[in-house]
Image (cartoon, rainbow, N blue to C red; front, side, top):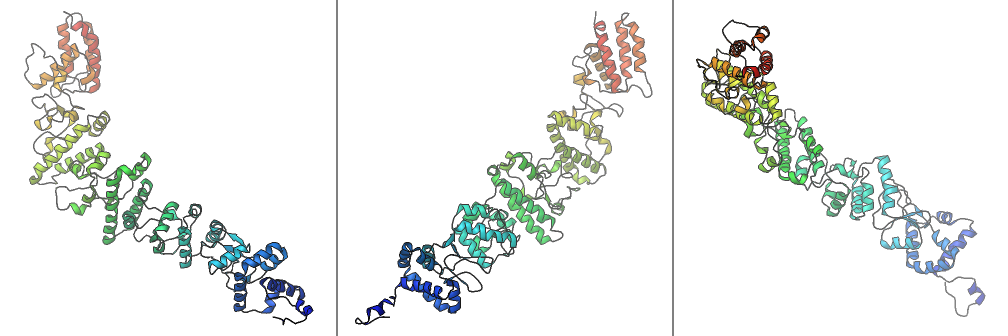
Length: 590
């Protein structure tokens, strides 16, 4: 309203000028005259949305003037703040004053799991700045996540929506490490199918080829919106997303293969898919064994997980020689598998690596124990091969190949028996087992003898009780001497004036010479047979001949010889050796 210059001065004083300050002041007077607060005044006025928009536009345009005046007049500032013209995020199209609402940082788009909130709608940065100047209550990004997002996630368990994913992208794009460390503690990240929210450390980066293969179709990846956003991937990586294979994640991958293997049942196609995944993982191990740097506990666990593809029996059907191969379902542990280069010495006891995952040279150098059968497996394999030979499981056409296999087994056992612990184990397992081929025909049961029946240095067999060591076994002395007597050891100095008529006399006289001149219990496991039915009581003879010791040493020596001829077990030989040590000074005196 404007007045003519000649208008009455008193009248002019009764009408305020139309200024931003006077307009706000007028609203205050209207409240006073109607005995209403500002919210009631606006409610009674029944304004349209466009009216609210015009008033907001006026306030935004004059905000600096209004704020300046409000800083000088506290009552005016209170009136300005009390205007209920600011829209909030609500399904009821509500408006709030600049006191009772909450202002979200402009760095994030608004998102809430609740339909009705007190958060101001800011359609642009100007809205945000005006509300900030009015001093509204505000929350930063971390406060918003901590007090308004995570509580809803942990109590309402909502399904992830497209709006939530977009909001999450904005949060992750901030690069705020404090927010990232908070979010990783909760199930806040959607899985690939967007069917649920999970912890970030349960998901894998699909850009990694190992993960992409092993966890295909497992819903353990991110949705495309997050997977294809580099900034999000970096943030999620800091939060625990599995992006690279390390020692712990490798174990997870191996366990995943083992789990998938148990679900295959009779689906050949699915089996091949899982085997291909397993091969990728095993090859990765071979190539990165040094960088993975497993500790002893982790390595122990890996050796026992059944995730390594093994050679199935039908793969070996082309070669009928290797019958009786160890049964396998197609996946075994490193602990149980054997390398193909040791196939001949263990195929009936150990499953073999699939050809595609045979250990590489560099991996074998790092872990030579992998793929090598235990001495127990080798010995048990020998037992099986011997049994199959005696049962003529192979034809005559396989004779040379069979003998080659047997010799390979002997050769390996011979080498292993250089270790005292393995030697003692072999003695225990092989005790009096007829598993040594001391002839040319592996199909002839009489060609097989026990280690205790073999004597090195013997020129001919003794009545089917002791056997000379034939050329085919002589190179395996470490293996055989663990339980086989040796004439060279029994008789280091030849006995003079003894006529050797047969091998029986050689053994008897050599032992007597040893007992008389050099008592030693090292070779007292030799058993002698003299005659066919003749038996002597060793203890009785020993007591009887004690009184003749000083009469004639030659006579005593002869009696000792007769006594030794009739010893029938190890205990008697040992007892004789101990007695000879007492007699030795007298018998050797001239």
